[in-house]
Length: 308
Image (cartoon, rainbow, N blue to C red; front, top):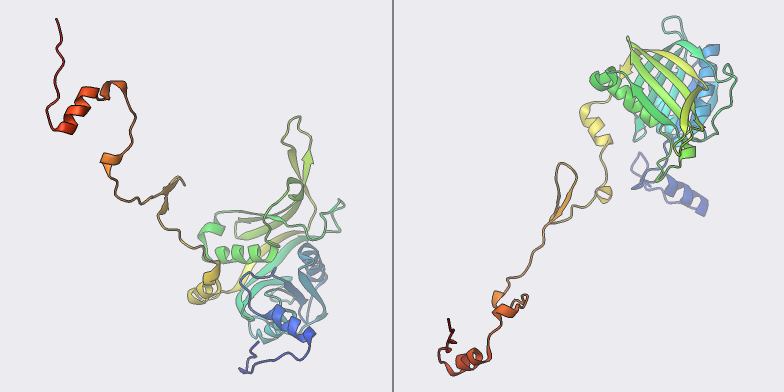
């Protein structure tokens, strides 16, 4: 592992070696963890909101209970320090003041430096404890639903959608069972506001093989308004999405697909000698015995007389 000063860090113990190997770059990334912290001035709404989002993000999250006197949009060195210390690539910062009350900042890191930051103000909040229903188990992978034209047209809303997907998506899995699809987080962009709702999927009897699905709100519930943004440049954003060559699928020769996804293959064959080609033998094309003898002697075969 190379430090910031360009010095090679050689582990002295097996424990430190395992630690450095866990922090080293990998072809397949680990699950993204988030650090959740509050600023110098907070309100009861912000404190409870951070706890509720932490409960949705567990176990891939770190909750700081002490106050951190920092302003991410002015100086992000404190966030970058904690990100490197806890190996977290996502962060959520909560603060409260007269100019920007009930403020949440969602952000993500690239190479332990701030990539994107988006500031959202809470206008209405309903806590997990305010809704008296059974909740989803800890660590449940949620299904994310985005509704609203702004998420597809506006550049800031597009980046916000990307940040929220990174924050709430959970681990990457190869297969999903039907009973495991029980948590839905719904985001709606309408009239300059973002509405976040959390539901639990209930599988009811429908009289057939496919169950009837009902949604039950479990909280938390947020009404956000978009405030300040700090977005990465297009070049830096493209660099952050770059994949190593080992993960890119290798192109197979002589295989193509059409617009419908049908697979076509091209087969290369050697030149064939058609005189040696074995075809189907028919009785009418079989040579008679006299014709075979005449061909061997070099004479023309005699034609049989046909009586009328």
